[in-house]
Length: 132
Image 1 (spheres, rainbow, N blue to C red):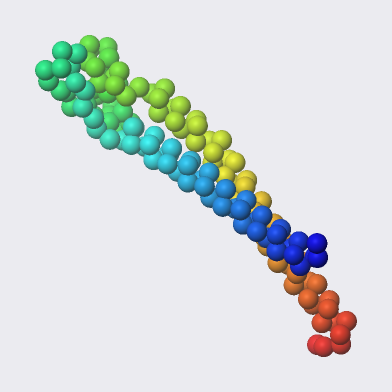
Image 2: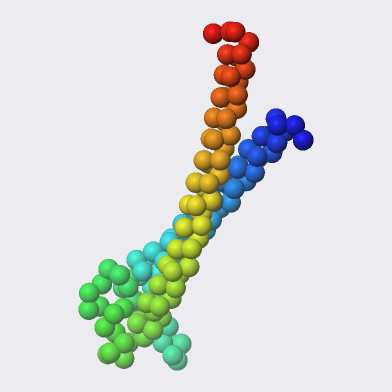
């Protein structure tokens, strides 16, 4: 394989690596969005007998409200959106974000280094031929 063909394949691989990184970062962003929706949006809880519903405030933006203190008062709001679920989603986003950042950085740096090497080879070729 000639060096030019190898370089083109190397750059294509670098672009694929960057694309995987962007994909994983998109997955992490979706998980962060899902976690934010669970924590920031109000919700409804249906009673055990199914006859009526109860409006509940968001988990994060309430202090001593239905979402946090309701469990102690026999309210169902605290059980509907539990903290471990939101923290699990947030925890799952961390490896995706770290891997996505690493892959994106590796792919981007590899592509730029390849372009730099090609430019340096071209400048050396011009210097050897005597052109300024």
